[in-house]
Length: 592
Image 1 (cartoon, rainbow, N blue to C red):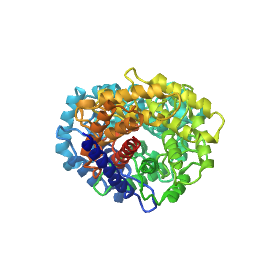
Image 2: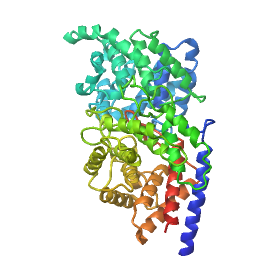
Image 3: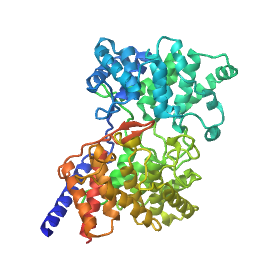
Image 4: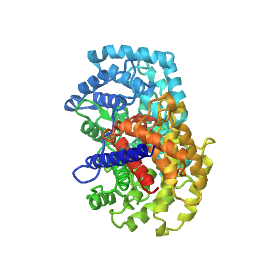
């Protein structure tokens, strides 16, 4: 038994080194990481529609390869998922149907027929009223994504002939965007904070096609010019809102359908879409997560002894350059934060700011007290009244993607704890409130539910394994959190599958490298040493070594949740998470 244990520990150490070297090899020439997001049928469909409606002849050359990619990646059941590896879902399939009807031609005819049969079976019919009810059932009162889908379906002829089809597209109150932006949170808009471009553009196209005899109609017409100026003012220089293909494409097709296809916003958006197209004909949902994956990579490699991390100063300088220095035009966010990307469409958010703060604290990254103090102040200013941390904007609690969330709150708490020596006013009080929020949001079974990650095979598409593993990892070593961490660890132990791995769906779905690595990392940090604990860790280590071929492989799974519940995977997630988990396990066993 002792020999088997020693052999496993040696294999874990070797796999850590292999994975660490592979992670280092993923750096771009400047020394940081960029990663690669999965190609997306949803993004590709919306881009094809936007190009068909507003593109110039050279830009329209991208439509054919896009259609071919969509046809090639149709699932056997006739539908499409958000990634080629995802289960088919109604939102994506409807958007592909709209794209094929609009621009598919003969190449998409057979695929279109199979897709309509899938939609009929999934929604219970293909009548506009049936489709509207099905989308409402998925998204509830959050119209951030359901209304753009219905707009695309109207444009693509899925909802019947125009103009009658537009009665199925709800009117978004775009005129409210003309009010002072500090009022937005109090207005309880029907879209989330980051969807202002969709509110404006789609609200306008609905009014254009189906103006009602209503007192608000004149008001809305009077605010078209003013809100279009705002839409232009908040458009990033690269043309892509949030660097997101779907959002940018929705805005473009809305403007084009309203007769504004030559507007400056549409032209810049088309420039972004053409630049974002991939050589295989597809589009990703976002350009990259460079800042996010760089922060996570630096932190993961900190636990790999002997890792030749010679680009620390260069990475730190690059990360410092990504910190905002002025009020952000899009969300009016204060300076001092980080977004997920180094590109102009990124928006400052709590998770990326916390990750950057933790990365800058890693030995070898230099001294960054001034930058860290600005980041800490930004986090303190974002904290909600419930003690938790939202993603982008304080006080927008009406819709799920604007509310406080446990994994981001715990991440911020860890970042504040790391930089507590700065003694920024209000830190201690904020940290206590965060801890209370986490205790309050812990589920009865000891888990926490995350916002930005899920598992499409799990009940409610939630991922308690991811959420719990994140919170337990972030809270490790923080005073006053031991009891809730122990409950979280107990949940993870109880969630271990019969094969030793983890999945957010338990035995109902395949184990993934990401979920197994995150759970194992959390348990390596938190489990009290005992024979039973070592059995759990040993089984988990064997599973991770099996899933990664001893650290050599890093297959990605679509557990990431993008805006409006779109699934994605990132090539670097499994590499980063397994490196960090193997390093934490090796440290635990070394210190015994």
